[in-house]
Length: 143
Image (cartoon, rainbow, N blue to C red):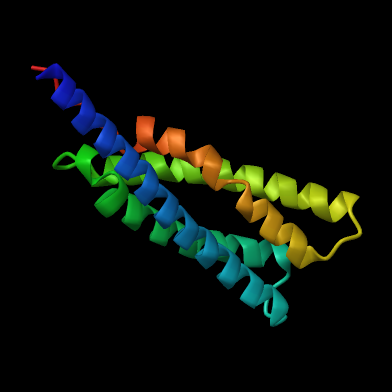
């Protein structure tokens, strides 16, 4: 029976990784699309455009992960705690994103759009472990 339980857990975790990747790709494309659209249209410069892209992508990312990727970890009454924890992780990722973007703009002669897309692309891999192990993982209350 232990082997069956282990196989189910492996299947569940593998599925969660796949779902995380799908949601992450959608959120990354949302971030890039919103930020690039605002930048290329001239509505905003690169940093404000990046912030707007991040905010829209956060909604996509949290919703997808809470209701789909990590639904097997969800406990009743944990949505606000999960959102708060995920926001900490997302803001840390955004800080990394912004640092990489600032370095790109300062150190390279290449286009701002290329730096924006590069800085967005490196963050998703960093967030999976924090999301899985902390943001969406709620231990049952001890009695």
